[in-house]
Length: 102
Image 1 (cartoon, rainbow, N blue to C red):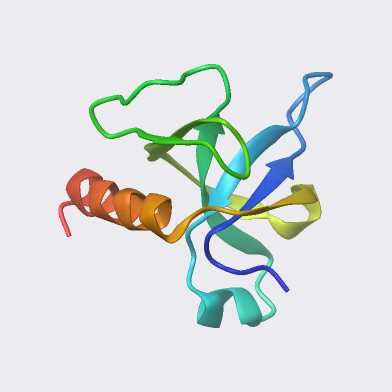
Image 2 (cartoon, rainbow, N blue to C red):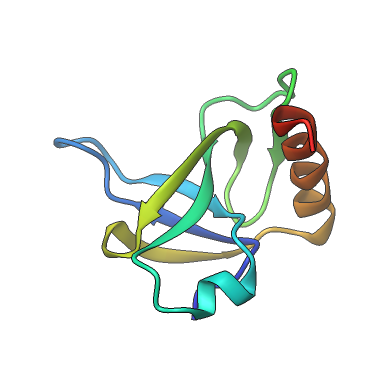
């Protein structure tokens, strides 16, 4: 089952390498048979805080980008890399509220 806070690689368009995404949709939403999950991109090459970015070290090193939200088709999910720390998810939550004015 896909859960909030997991990091999955997502197939990229063309021949590029898969891109990691942090799942942000709720576990209740993820448990329903919807065609997509909601996630934010993780930039593996950006290792510093951005205005709304959140640096993370596990399960991948990079910066979660809450301003790059995407509805990811489940069929594009390739590999579950693990779960982000509760502290990282809390920071991403805070930045999502800032980006979306919630």
